[in-house]
Image 1: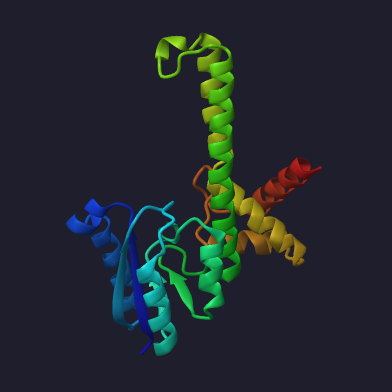
Image 2: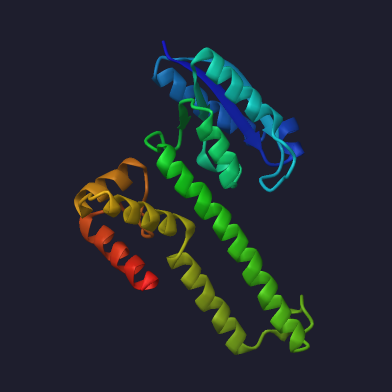
Length: 225
């Protein structure tokens, strides 16, 4: 019988108290473990925010017990991990088996990609926001007033939303996986099958096919050219 150590993380103190979010994670993990005919030896719950600089006490306890018991550290969703490369690296360095219920086929390689992209995106959003606000202030625009938005600004806002939809996080993550897989010599068909195993979907919600992978790979090459 396979042994598991469960780790749950909720983003607000209120969720930890009320069980909102936590109960869904626990239910997801328990259902998966039951389907594997495994056993959960212990459960650890962290109550914090994703950007908190405070040391995570419970995750280190969970890692330690998983290592001592030769058990699998299991979480409900990958986004329950802090979006920090160093944090994920420490998890990988612990040398324990790790599993996310929402993406059981994910391995150390793909988890590293997700965390790196999430951290980079957070920094880019912060940087772009500060630059945009700075430019508006230079022009004397009073921020926070919808009347300041011209038709042109509104149109640009709509266009930005469309561009963000096209270049969403999952799309960028898929492109990174595709690039790495191509470097390993995998064919477009093999990469499509790999992405589908990882539960990736296209931006239209469909499974990946070889032509779609080829298109994304070409787009990545054009961006880097």
